[in-house]
Length: 60
Image 1 (spheres, rainbow, N blue to C red):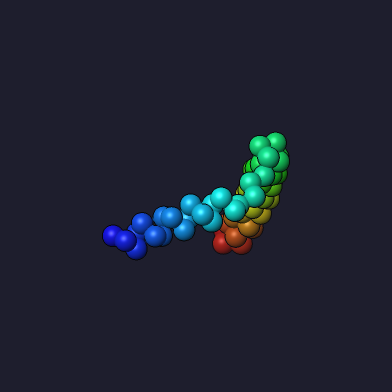
Image 2 (spheres, helix red, strand yellow):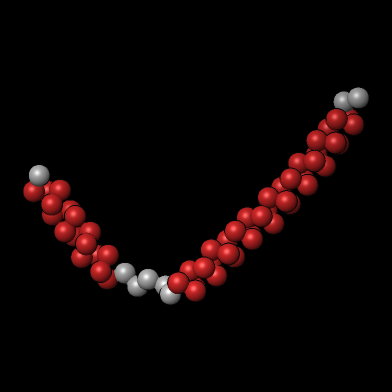
């Protein structure tokens, strides 16, 4: 039980050292990630549709 207590004490000490970004910067970074994922999703979807069409065309 003492090891668990020591672990959480050390976690608390380390978390106090963390430099957290301001809320606006965090929101901006999150927005960039979400938009990037949306664009990547569209690209992968278009490539998938093209390949599906080509493979279907080849085997008909």
